[in-house]
Length: 170
Image (cartoon, rainbow, N blue to C red; front, side):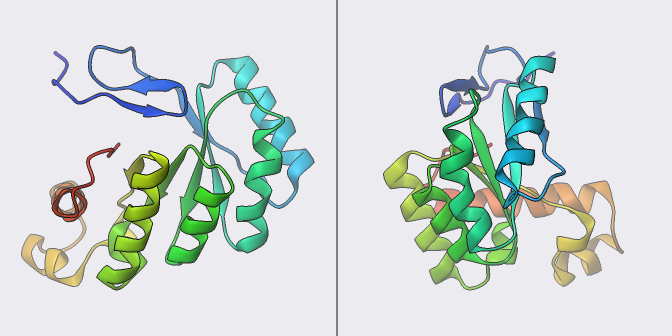
């Protein structure tokens, strides 16, 4: 049984609600290597991929997004770690979505900047949580890394974004 969810759009692709499950993958190329990244994305497209995520490790990778997008046909999501400025530059470059861990962005002021930019451009945010990103207080409460601890972290991050009146959450 499917859970009732809100519909968001990643580029032109609707996600959630009654829409079919969307196939997403991530490149394993260096995003700064535009030609190799585009080639890999085109192969994914041919295989049925509907959304693609690329790693944004620095400003050059963020700037590459606009050039990559001109050569592909599916929405592109920027995977951001720690540096909110890379999220802002990725949005500026035309990323159709962000993957962030709000807890890794740092101070609330920085997260608010990202949320404001996403609101202005209607860019959804996927909350990413993994074992390495769990807050110490959650680790203590759950006795270490566990699936329930990661769920708790994700839910806390959802609440953080919703408290900023942001609801385009994937």
